Length: 292
Image (cartoon, rainbow, N blue to C red; front, side, top):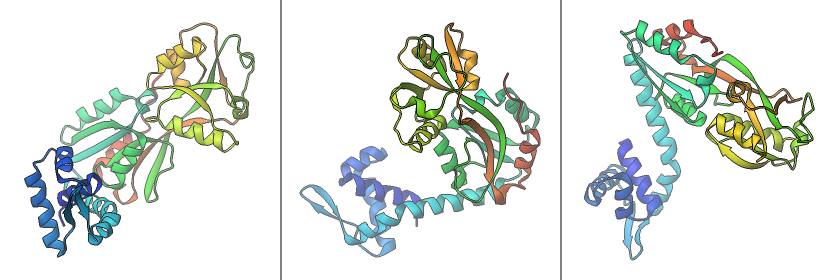
């Protein structure tokens, strides 16, 4: 079964139209129709029937759609796994969660790539969840992630634990405190890093576990903007400690949480890949030197 045919099927099923699906896939409707007919012939069934609204899925299509995601994920994992076996000694693909290079040394990673010029090393920066997805599908060999809440079957190595702090502007009732509890933030206007960053999801879960939903009035990927908004009294800012380097503003107080919240960076690979020569070489370098 061709993964491209399955992607075409899934897109047509969701769009309810060959024309709309072709546009989303940057294909011609004729080329898309050919892929669907190939899949129908392979499965021995009809997947779509034309209607005044566009196309309607058959019962076979409904059944296939419930399994398409699992089939494609398994096919990607098999393809990626075979590629890892074939290229294990000559390739190393690395995925980095957004923000990890605030605490890990990119120059040292680049020096590693230069030193091992016989290995084709590629890397990219993605949302935390996308790094885990690519690790699971074997699209990458090694990941730097924030937090350890991924699927089973992975070897994790903690590289850094960074305290999470509350940035408070002068004049706020919490400004003079030496510690702050999460429960004291109920009803406060808050500024946090956006959904691309693991700290956003961790912070919301921590608040919900204490019985309230935080009032987040601003989200950003820019640490300096986060600090500036706090100074402008838009709200209190939740920051990992390394962002204090961007806080050159007077009259601000960074307060630790009583719950000792941390922003944790891990090196991750599949357990069955831990002995790959390229991964062993990389892990000899770890933990990478923290940025100071």
